[in-house]
Image 1 (cartoon, rainbow, N blue to C red):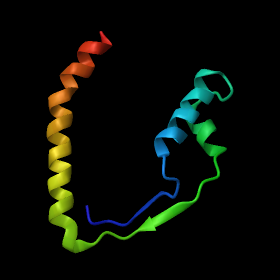
Image 2 (image 1 turned 90 degrees about the horizontal axis):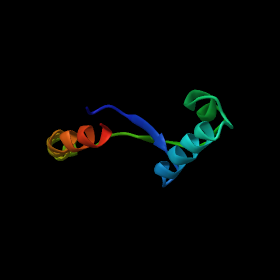
Image 3 (image 1 turned 180 degrees about the vertical axis):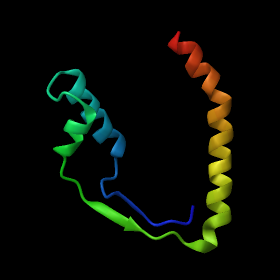
Image 4 (image 1 turned 60 degrees about the vertical axis):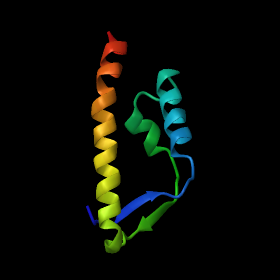
Length: 79
């Protein structure tokens, strides 16, 4: 998109998300919004390099292709 972004300074955002989900499913927190509001995390500001736009666009296109190809397997597993 070429837009700046604020990203988590923490290297493993997946673990933070898993912890939030655990807090909700265990009843410690009523919902994700409440659980995440209690977090104190550092954000890092990222300015995109316009010279890399073609690389970002290609990577995103490949991501979309793979997501679309895999989506039927997720839907089949949900039923």
